[in-house]
Amino acid sequence: MTLPTTPGDMIGYSIRYLILLILVGIPVESHSWVEEAVVVDEHGQRIGPLGYARCNVFRIPGVDVDQEMTYKLPQAPKSQVTSTDNICSDRQAQLVTALALQAAPGDVVSLRYQENGHIALPEASPGKPDSGVVFVYGTWHPVPSAKFRDIHRVWGTLEPGSNEEEFLLTRSAFDDGQCYQVNEGQISRLRQATFPHESSPPEGENKWCATNFTVPRWHTCRSASGAPSSILTVYWIWDWPGSPGNSSAEQYYTTCLDVIVSG
Image (tube, rainbow, N blue to C red; front, side, top):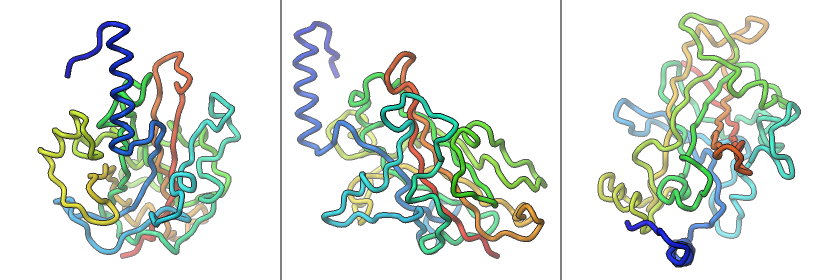
């Protein structure tokens, strides 16, 4: 792909790029959240039923899923996250087990989300050096008003044999190296050829991204009182910083969900 080098080239490139976004149906401003959670085997294949975020909104005609499921921090008009900002949106603040994934200690859970062009069309996100990092935290003792600043980059990795109630389950690049949104961008076309994907609902023709974590063993499943706890609350954070001085230098999206642990 030839990059623009003159002001005239830049204008023409911008116009052509905007047309591309319209043609492929990609909004200039789009977001990501955990679409589904699933236990997978060593080959990444699904085992058992799916789980979903708290108060998940499914993709059905006439429903603005983006509006319902997006929780962005800092919230306008603030430019930075404060100590009072909750890690969960109001709709996801309470523990809800109706849509929770069921898993056993030691299971590998895959949290799946869409890249929405942030990987396949990096030009759509000026001021962003890359697509960011995903952090996944877990707790056996959730509270509805849990604060973002008290958790993100504060909770540490769970050590073997530890009985910690609050911990970092995993961190990984937002880009898992295979996912893509189908469009005419160079990255998307290359990945479509390298990682072909059979279209099926709800994923459709796009190949969703995934972040995996291992469910802690039973000896860590203890509440503050020492009683066994069977519900693991999971906080998924997409940390997507901008370049220094960029208006979106600090930008996060979160999803809160629960895993019923048994076995």
